[in-house]
Length: 557
Image (tube, rainbow, N blue to C red; front, top):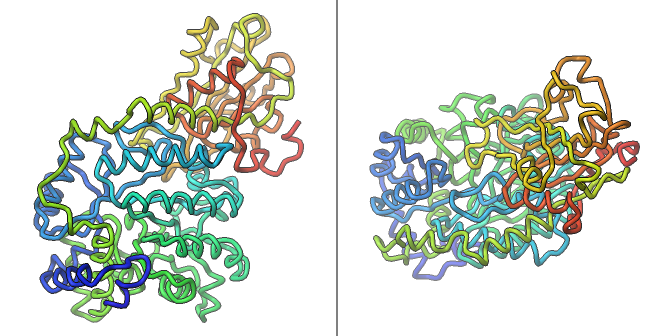
């Protein structure tokens, strides 16, 4: 135990290690195993809240989808009831995945489009400071996935782009800034996503690289994160068959998800790369894991095969019982329970949770006073504006003006609202243009756009990368209507502009679209910036962090 806790990234003092030892000795039975769970906080679930108070898990994840005040009170009640300090984790990625009441910031891809590194650090600092104010001490970021396959709907706007060097640089900045604030950062998703277009929320995805190519890409990314002292890594439901085969696995076992793979969690991550921090699984309800084996089988395998904490549970008491049964029948060893518990408590001690006075929590008014301050909003406005990227304008069509483009036919599409519980995209660009004097008419199949009734065709699509969203593409049939409408192209007669408030790869399906703007996220600040740039009131500054042309040379023209 002492060897683990003295080393990076815990770096605990003798007194801190004594605290960990004391807590371990005091934890028995179900509460000992409950420390190995991170539970999604749902204030509206009375049975869950009761279980959290009784079993006292090691961590809860805060989403604030039911409102900031309710969420903060719920987290405080869990902490007040706990004998051992509780970690409060959250996705601090930006874009549509943000905490209620906080300043809107671009997602990771939008951040990567910022032309200056200091712009990213300023914007990230606001996100981190506000997350800390809300109570987050464990950030599930940065995402170190690589946009290698542009068809991937889950990596897309959550990544720093397609350049491993850029991903590494921004990821390292993220880790340093987060942990300088006393917040644990998380490198995810081990062993690396982005070469498989599918989504691990619905299928076990595959990292198809050779071992040598993996070491030259993801190996470098994760090793640098480890050298930066990243406190936690998240193991995805991602297979790495080349490495599994190098360890003697054959058949389906070569495709075992990393979250339950001893080869990937212990041999590769801990022994080869030297990671000593806390390893947490990705969310266990995801089909990338549940499609592999039943919960009673893989839940203890998560801990036994190298992870220290299990992310999310539909029933904490039932899942604790599954671990207990596995402990009794020998599928889960006491040694692995002890090591996992050491790292869970060690993470808490490394963040100083054991030194926080119990019951002394900031008031809701104090929390809100630190959110969306004028200085933070100004930084958010700058980041939103600086990230917007002009991909191409071959006309040129821009800038828009009333003399040439007064009559606008607007076609919009947003994500399924069930996929956007954090911040549903509300497309405001049409209203913003109307306020400038443009006549904006929503597209209708009964009013086919022609030069007689339309001066500009404007597409505004809002699809950020979200779980289980399936394929994201420029769906001509859905946007225009039945077959003959879907096949019609009018950009030779009417100027066309496409604005993406998310997915940056629409030129794969619409390569000859003459004017394309990628804005990466659908926040109000971003949409306001897009309109200013469309009108020529300020220049485009964003630098595309991906190949928005999807490898198609003709899409550049």
